[in-house]
Length: 264
Image (cartoon, rainbow, N blue to C red; front, side, top):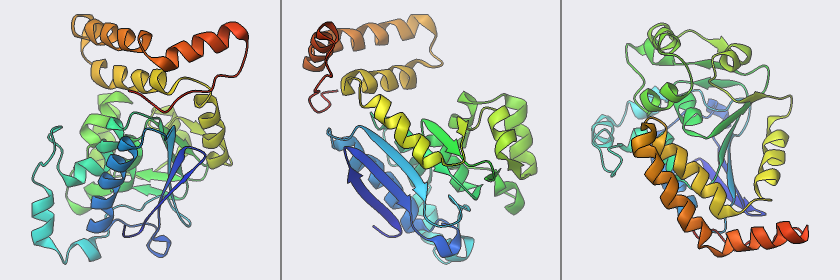
């Protein structure tokens, strides 16, 4: 993969944008590879979580227009939807992480602008340094965000905040982002905090964790009439599964469970 590093350690996939000299500005290859990486993680049932970060001083400064601008025909091709979710390649770079049945934590430092913010919002959780700064920067270029932000930001903040930040392109702080619900937590060492959270998740059944994510991704705006059947179906599947039996047995015996790879 081009400028995307991928490593699995202790059942955790560490995905890192690796173009530090450009503050991890996104090339078209990087955008394509992010979606492919999400698919790769989803197929590996041994993985328990993903930590998504950026090498160097910034998480991601957004699309590298100098690079992408030389490939206009490819940009147009990438805007054509190619997935069952109706996402095109640009949108899949952020939204494909929602379909990965494990927790995805974005660790953010430095700049998180434009497409970088949209990728971060596609994660389940965002852990930030206090000094990180944020912007829906597309307004600077006379554009709107088109890498899945319309779906992801609607789950996190109010419509007036979303309109304001998209219309102005203003740069805002981690403190503001936390207040608006756009990031989950602020830490001096967000990577360590993400790893500590992953260790908590790994103590639970991978099937239950996956089903929790699937439940909310499929019901968040559905209401009870559509949401309850999804909840029922997922629970019945878990009750029949081997990892739920392992969790029950370990809980009764007050022992640490030894789970099988994810079955969901």
